[in-house]
Amino acid sequence: MGSPATLRRALALLAVGATALTAGTIAVPAVGAATAAPAHDLSGVHVRPASFGHHLATTRPAPLTTTQCVSQIGIHCYSPVQYQAAYNLAPLYKEGITGKGRTIVIVDSFGSPTIQHDLEVFDKQWGLKDTQVEVRKWGNVPAFDPKNPDHTGWAGETTLDVEYAHAIAPDAHIVLVETGVAETEGTTGLPEMMDAEKDLIKKGVGDVISQSFGATENTFPGYDKGDFKSLTDLRYAFKAAADRNVTVLAASGDNGATDSQSNGTDLYPFKVNSWPSSDPLVTSIGGTQLTLDDKGNRTAPDKVWHDKSGAGGGGVSGIFSRPWYQAGVADVTGNHRGTPDISMSAAVDGAAWTYESYDPTAVGWHLTGGTSEATPLFSGIVALADQLAGHRLGQLNPSLYGLSLLPSNWSGIVDVKEGDNSWGGVTGNNATQGYDLASGLGTIDGTKFVHAIAGDVLGNDNSQGDEQ
Image 1 (tube, one colour):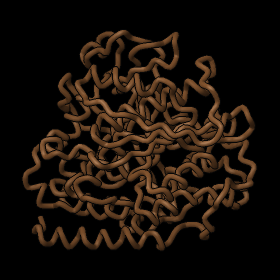
Image 2 (image 1 turned 180 degrees about the vertical axis):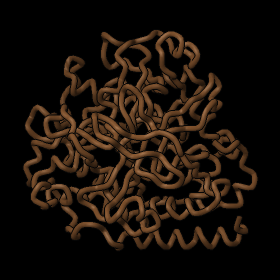
Image 3 (image 1 turned 30 degrees about the horizontal axis):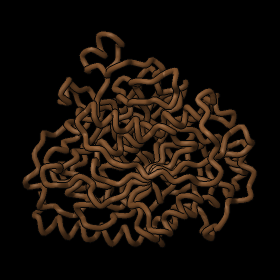
Image 4 (image 1 turned 45 degrees about the vertical axis):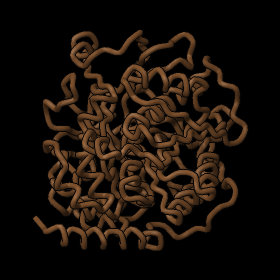
């Protein structure tokens, strides 16, 4: 194990590398920052909330314990308090590291008309402190229709995103950006989402952006001809984020090594990847399955999410070549960008409790899984690290891959060695020792990881918590 001085030097080099990424090798030719939505026809590109299909419809008047869920429903279920315990966050909270002074931006189509009320009920149930969600509407957001499955699907995603980002970083400010483009209008929401993100970035709003949505790379016009401009023209928000040191996260997907075709329903019969998760300027968040007792203690090591409902997304991009920060895992990724980068809880057999009242016919407690859970969980972790560092950490990937070279006790990165992300008849990737295309670098011990990624390596001397 290296000395603290050696580790400080290593982290200093990582910081230099992170700065260099802005101008570093990206897989595709550079394109100018757009000032308006691209003119490409994206009508065949279906962007959906990553939780689509992983939201259990049954409404319950009160949440159950994990033991009760296993006996009554046949799956594990977890509360925010259990996640706080599982990711060893108590030492951070005792230090006063709660996300205070930091802002998480969450981007979802349509949003939820009851998000503030639902968050307050959620907080009261679990003894969390309340916060006021700042809602910003981008464009013409239609009136919410509880009978419209597009609206309710995104409202469920919105609820999951807000409640679990808040659960991890209770003092962080949350800005919910609601966009208003429906699939039924023959267009998709990606240009509007990117426009909204770039506008907030330029205005200095947000330290970390959480994106729980994605679209399969292969569905973008021109992909089959090797013309990727319809996708790369959408990268302007991420370039703006890199310039302003804003961290951008995206869910790796819930269909394992494959993903949806342009009809939004059928899966490709071979390995594919999705954007924005595959973008080198984005940190891709994969999915794990946690096995916890009622108090949040692990009873088994984390493994790659793969249950009856889905599997964590991961694989290599068909558009982006391997970024420089993945040079050390080139034996896994080949010449392509590999995803995910890091993983958090996502399994449906291990689902998160949410409180929802946007649908008057289904008011109460629901269970939701997917990498759309993992992404807001990690956005909270980033907010904690930004607070500890005293500044935005910006692009995390160079530091993530650098930290992975250190002992886990210093880095807080915990290897995931079990499971695979096969799904839909497509043989996926196995979790192995070190980096893999199912879990990325692994998962985290929250206290150790936050200190490490923030550059406070000596803080890990006082970090408590068992290795996972």
